[in-house]
Amino acid sequence: MCLSPATRATVLSRLNASKSFTTHMGLQQPLDVPTEEDDETQNALCTLNSLLYCMFPQISSSDRATTFQPVRPFSEDDLDLLENLAPDIEHDGIRARAYEILWALRPGKVNPNHAIEAAKAYLKYFQGRDKQDADSGLSTVERALRLSGVYARHPGGHPIYIGAQQQAFHVVQDTSVELNVRCTFLNMLISTQKKADGTVPIPELLSWTAQLAEEQLAAGNHVWRSTLAQLREELASQCGPVEKQAARENTAQVLVDMADANAQDNPIHAKKAYMNAERLYLDLGMRKEAQRMQLKGHALTPAIVGKMKPMYTEADDFKEIARKEALQLNQLSSLEECLKKIASYHAVYPQVENSSQSQSLSRLFGQFHLGVNGEVVNSTGKTGEVGFTLGEMQQHAQLSAMLNCHLWSATGARWTPEEEDISALVKANPAVPSNYSSQVTVGLIFALHNDYLVAASMLAPMPEAIFRRALQSAGKLAPYTTASQSQMQTTLGTILEPQGELYPELERMFGKDLMADAKRVLDTESLNVRNTMLHGLGNDQYTRSWPGLAMIQLVFRLAFAEHPGWQKGPADPV
Image: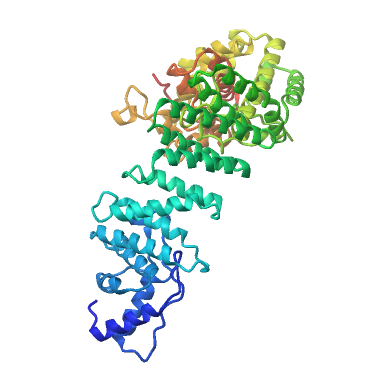
C-alpha cells in the first residue's frame, strides 16, 4: 500500500501520538479513526489497528509459523504499509512489535534485519521504560533474547544478541525480580548459548544456577530445583570431571529432597524419585547411597498400598468371595453345569455381583502391555511404577485369575475329570474346530488339575483357530487351503478390529461380552497375551501367572459357553 506523503504524515502522527503499549497486546488501545479523514487515511489506520492491536504473540519467537496468530489474513499491501512506516515509528515498543510482525508474517520473505531491528527496539524500550509503568518490560528482554538468538551469528545480529544476553543476566541477578522469573531467564540464557557463544562465562552461570537452586530450596519449590539441577549438569558437561561429578551428585540430592518432601502426600511419586536417585548413585559408584535409596523406596510400599486400597476390594476379602463362588459351584449336579458356570466368568476381570471388581478395564488397555515376567509395562518399554492406574489394572487381572483358579481347582477336585469326560463336552460345541478338539481338551484338563504352565502353552493358539473357524462357517473368511493371497494375510489383529468387516460377525456369533473379553486378552493394543506367548516373548513366570491364566479362562469361555449366534459350517480349517 503506497501512501501519499500527506497521508503518511497523518498516519505517523497519530501512531506516534499513541503511548499505550504493552508487550502482551501491542497497542493497548486501538488508534482512533476519525470519520472526517479521507478514505486512504481511514483504511491505513484500520490496517494498523489490525496489525498492531491485540495480536498476541506466542512464547517462542524462534518459530515464525506460530509467533503470531493473526485474526485475519493480511495482504502484501498491508505488510508493505507497515514496513514503510516502521523506521519512523517513535515508540520503541510499537516499533519493535512492527518489525517482529514483519519478520513473522511475511510469507516466503524472511528478512533477518526485521528480527534484529525488533530485538534492538525491544531492548531500547526496556532500558528507557517508565519504571512506574504497569508493564514491567521483562517480556521485552525475553523477546529480544529469543529474536536475536535466531541470528546470533549474523554480523548485524551478534551485537544485539550480546546486549540481550547481558540484560537477561542482569534480570537473573536482580533480587527484586520474582524468583521464578529469574530462573526462567537463566534457563533462556543457557539455552541460547547453545546457538552462539555468549558473554556470560560458564562458571558464572554455574554459580547462579547453584544460587537460585538454594533460593528455590528455601521456597520449597522442588520442581524448579529439579530443572536447575538439569541445567547445572548441562553446563558442567562443558567443564572438567570435577564439575561433572559435583553436578550429578547435586541432581541425586535434589531427587532425594523431592522424594522426602513427597513421601507422605505422594508416596508413588516419591518412590520413583528414590529409584532415579538410586540409579544415579550407582552410576557415580556411590553404592552405600544407592542402597539407602533402595531401602527408602521399599519403605514406601505400605503407604502406596494404602493409597490404592479405596480403589478396589482387598485381596483377602476377595479370596472369601472366590471361596463362596467355589462352594456354590460344588452345589451343581454335573460336571457340564460346573464348566458352563465357569464359562460365565470373565478372563480379565471378575464378574461378581455387587463387587467393585466387576468394573471394565478396557479404558486402561491400549496404554500398556505386559513384560516378559507378566509385569505391566508402558508403551515406551519402561516398567511402570506402582500407581493407581497400573495398580488397578494389574490388581483386577490378578484377582480375576484368583477367582478362576478357585473355580478350576474346585471343579477338578470334585469331579476329577478324565480326557473322555471333557472331550465329549468340547466336541459337542460346534464352535471348536474338530481337528483342534483334542488339544483344547487336554489343555483344559491340565488347567483343572492345576498345571497352568502346560495348560496355557497348549491353549494359546486356540482362540484364533476358533475365530477363524467361525468366520469360515459364516462365509466371511476362506479356509487356508483355498484362500487367496490377501485372505492368507488376514491377521488376528485385523479380525479383532472393531471397525473392520469381521469383528461384527464374531460379536453376532459369540456375543459382545465375550468378544470384549477376548479383545482385552488378545488384542495387540491390549494385553496381547497370545502374541507374547507364541512368539517366545514371555517366560515361564509369564505363562503360569495371570496373563497365562487369562488365556486359559478365555478358552474355557469359548469351549463351554453357549453361542446361540454360531452357525455350524461344512468345513474345519486345515
